[in-house]
Figure 1 (tube, rainbow, N blue to C red):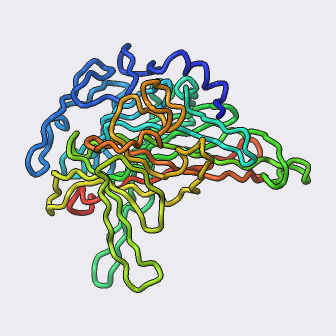
Figure 2: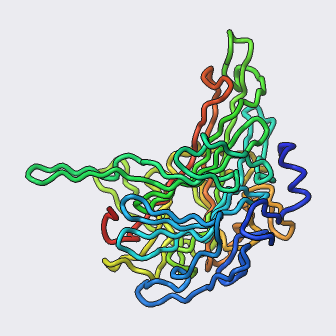
Figure 3: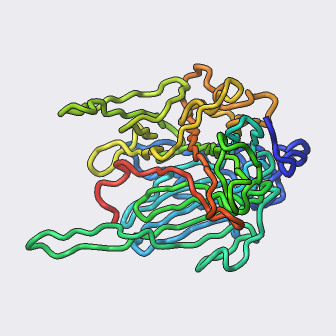
Amino acid sequence: MTVRLSALLPSLLSCALIVTCGASASASAPARAGTVLPTGTVRPSGALSPGGAVREAARRAPACGAPYLVERELPNGARWRLCWEMRVIEGLTLTGVAYTPPRGRPIPVLRSTALAQIHVPYDSGEPRFHDIGALGENAVTLASADCPGGERRERFVCVTTRSRGHGYLKSLPGEPNLSALGHELVVYAAFQIGWYTYLVEWAFSDDGAITPRVGATGSLAGFATGPEYGWSTGTGDTHVEQSHTHNIFWRLDFDVDGPKHDVVEQYDFPGSGTARRTLSRTVFTEEAKAVNAPARWWRVVDTESRNADGHPISWEIGDSGSAQYRGPADEAFTRADLYVTQYRACERLASNNPAPRCAGSVDRYVSGQRLTDPVVWVNVSYHHVARDEDADPMPTHWQGFRITPRDAMAENPR
């Protein structure tokens, strides 16, 4: 186990400090409903009203102010609202994320979300880095060119909007064409860890989707190796750059349409190679871990809230783009692609967890406890085999996943 030197000392000194936040108070864990937030304001927990009506918590102002409050209306009339913090350990952290569709009511989605680890094992077996330990201390000051068309918040965070391509295009004989470009709100920051510059980004689409992703750029680490563990770069074959994996974990504390009644489900569609394909649903009632499989996805559903069609409101998690790294016994946290755990404030990172009163890694958080307040951990792997085009500065390679509304609305929010 290796921690890059730039991340080691601050994590030993402080596990609680917020580098940049809405007040002088520090916070060591994601805020809970009904507790004091860094701004000193209290977010009421709120009670679920029949039929999924607007909760009192969703009606109230967010528990942060400028410059930490992000509220943005996109061209189709959809709105996103959230708060951001720069925490020492996790770096950029978002709280109170809510989506309002055009002509609709606000729908809370996430209580909090942040990176939970960037684990970088090299193919020869060494080194094996855990890059999150003091991410916020290594935030990069963004230049105006790093935030095109947007605004920089406290030097470290960019808030901007961009096109996401066609939101839809419909062309049928005898009917008028319908088409529109979609847009998304983007919140991101950059962090310098060793040789790598990590771009940490959340994109919030006008159709209610969320895309968390991380881009690795900067410089290659420069670990030479034999040809069995890497790829020749530069002139001739004298230098072989060692291949490695980026295992990135996100921690997602969902509050789908409010702080209660969230359930995590897994959906499978077996029948590959046959003419028929059935639907299979697994409800996680206890802490669990799962691996990717063809035609498999998960969702977090509020079992009491309904859209106008009477269907339960949920957000779907898809993670089909992972390289699915599986490490040795001392890296058991890499052996699943999704974990569901009961909320505990001290369970912060997927590995090298800094809180001594909690287990050290996410695989050990799964202990059979009944789920009443589930937290979802998503693991996405990217195997980086260097190429000549990675010569300094290295082009960004991205990895991430998508969170999509499923029956949060009764129609296309166009």
